[in-house]
Image (cartoon, rainbow, N blue to C red; front, side, top):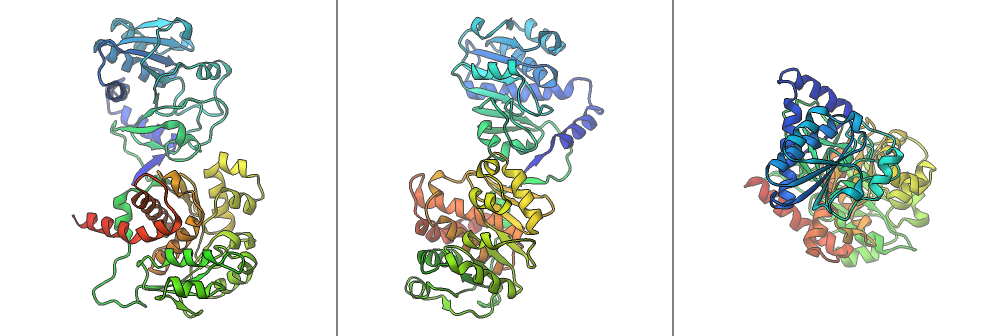
Length: 464
């Protein structure tokens, strides 16, 4: 699990650790890690040109001490101080002793091979001041290494407010921060490089699943099991308008993680032809999936599914029927436009404040909310959030959401709680798209067909 902590949690941990270390030792650890990351990007130091953009405070100090290390390795290091009177004194002295120099503005600096963004650190909020914003907009065309977070992004929300740095690499200390995982800030971070500085941190409320986390909770049948013990997932998807959604949703549910699939809807003939193993009736199930391509049938399908008093996945057209808290364990799977309609806000607000709106929806509907996207957020009503990063852009294709909804239902029927089923399904869905497409285009059937293969590889790896 990749943990992302808040500014308050990090500050508290830093203060506790600093009491046990010699003065300045924590900054020296950070500067070592930062300098190493810059060297990794450059490949070598000698003769390379490094431009430091230095604000006040500890973030600027990290940049200055790292610059001193690079200068001692033979790099030509220049520092542009945004607030010369408030620059970190010991760091600036170390840079000058090592041979670095201060430049008054960008026009006076040599064209850099890399820019180090040490303008503001994790304590900043509300966007950049006008002078810093103007500097960011005028940056030279060179790779940027951000110190802790790119300047101008909000650390605890993942939001951005106006001009901000877009980094090639972000070097963060002690732990990931929320901005490294949550869009739109995550895209500004580039590759996040974590430097361990010895912090003792509490549990994080925002985490990102890794392969081992998924393998640990993926349902595996016991040797003496049978199909009903493994869980039966019911699907109410598709309609006269959108019959293909039924086939795709059933395909996701028929991934092999549950013991059986039942289908109840207008797409029965198509489902029978595509999936002869599926039982077409409305019998007993351990979870329902409802709404994918549901059209005018979605209202009654949702009502019938909730009356069964089993966990439910609510997707697509069924989402528009929600009016308040749900009475059963539920996993809602909106994209940004659907979530905007559920909350009565503009889609642009959801895209700009994904974490905030996912959490708000989870509280309002008393359900787990899976907000789809390149970085998928899965929010629980208690405020915990899991992030699934790195979905290939090719996955944005018609029908892929239907497959995901079915997969979510299979995991619920197999016994996973909604807050586990959502992120595990999103991770498998993303991995299946990568596996099937080999970095290129995929279709929804490609993704559905690859899910069992991904599970096989994942479970094989977990036993190795």
